[in-house]
Figure: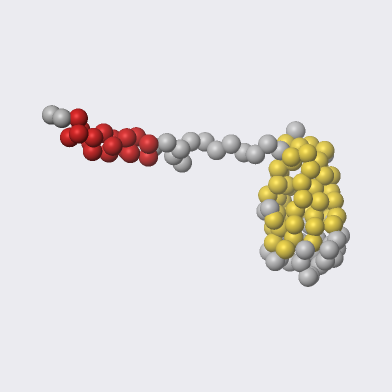
Length: 119
């Protein structure tokens, strides 16, 4: 058998082996927690929806929407309320304790976001 006859079979085998590289079965690494973060409020959404920060970090909430908003946690270990954030305003909250903090907008409770704080 000539080498040229084996070439198509070798190429097919190589394609099958390479297809397995980078599969979804590999665990994904979470991004390292940030020293500080900014959450933009636009189109009645928090973006990003989840931020991960280090303990002691400051999270800024920047309102780019036409409507006023808040970032508020009313329950749990840490309670905070930015009060009303008007269009173009920024308010900040410092997160001192590790944990996961889910917040909403008091004016639009369907708006939800999360701050994950790592020690």
